[in-house]
Length: 82
Image (cartoon, rainbow, N blue to C red; front, side):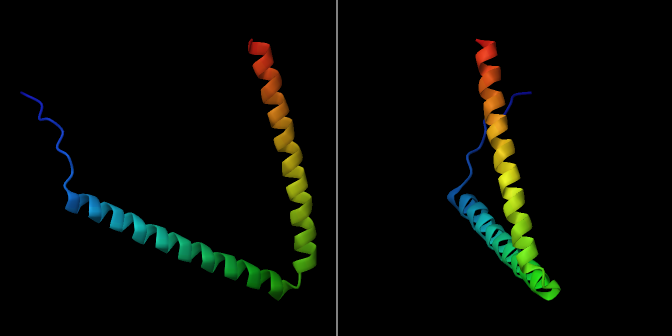
């Protein structure tokens, strides 16, 4: 059996694919916006906004510190490979 050569998609097929991707991205964007709004309302409902902001700042510093350590470890491992 002979293999058929790969058939290029038509312009109409490409438009459909791009259109579907745009629609899906819009759906995801709206879903994330809704989740963000719900989460914010939950924080306001519990009156934990100040406490939550402090916790976020603490976590951000912690993650930044870990990221710097990972970069440092990567650089040292690269030097050991050479």
